[in-house]
Image (cartoon, rainbow, N blue to C red):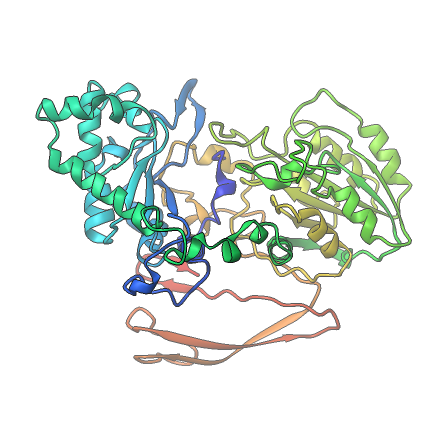
Length: 541
């Protein structure tokens, strides 16, 4: 329900940690895994990556019991165990393994203390425990929230002193600029504390080479290596396409409806048939070279499927819009679908439903989309339902209503439509796995959005949720029939019984697995292993 779920890689802290550590190093070091921070030859970075939002920023703006609660005044009550086990690991990986040079403190409070004034978490954990020596910036307006929304201190002077003393070096706002000198003169803030933040900021600028000559001294300022030609290059386009392909998850494929045969009479139905910008998620620029706000250079599903379905017929009808009841063209959509041999139903949400500053109170398909799905299912045709979204979707009764195939495409980026077409028509054998749990609709009332506990029954995520799921974390089918066999399991310490590792007492361990594709569909796949820690009943991938 959080309006910014599309900005996170998934629900699992271990997998998110692995993702962010590589992402940050790729950003800062240009993908050079051999870069050693202690090597003077590699003292420069491409960018100063800033991990956010530290920590507990899981609510944007919601109505709770008739009262508006926003990120600016929300107090995230999180037990220390859950903070350590679930909320902090990704940030720790960002620092320890990713070597991030920046961290952004969030708007919210944690256990009564605004994060940008939270000395325990900014200094005690981030700097003292994890060894972070970069800079901390506030989210924009978060320092003002310390006094204006959280009422933690009375005014801007004390908020400035509290923020800098806690280790928040910069204010994305105007509070510091107006009050640092006043706080020093009032003896609320020492000059040493101000100098310490200034030192950290200048050090980052030095790592970026901003004080050096822009010739042979700073390698990242070399236009022949890092010029405009590196942007939107053929290699980058291939990578964007590959990322889109790997992100698509086949959730259901009864009767092997997929892949479709090229040359088929196909009807595309749904509000996302001609979508373009929706696939780019949030925080994107003007993608097309002509700065067109229509995103004409990003293929729509209609264009991509019409192109790949050589010799076939592609018809379409939207049926309804994403998020309102004003447009009801379902009868027309049913007529179009009835004349086709197969139906591709493109449903989901978009930036009008989930965005920064706005949470959802429902995980079902909005507007008239459920009615559209039921109408198409009643035709009893070979059909596939494509889910397009960032945050959670709950299908409820639509899951088993008679649509034999379900594909989760998420917001797949600029090549989402092309990748989706490749999967639907068998040019690519899907390999994606769900990075989140798909819950039933009643989950929303069982777990209020302001409740930050992940362990309180019925629990949250695959680690703690005890109820029935619509699709489990890690679900992902293939057009191939795979068999996997563990052929060897070893640890640095010992093995307890056949194929059982004492991983809790081992410093490292290895598992060798043979995977076999038992049919003619070429493809790849991945396996998932769980460390079942019987001490706390947690399954860690």
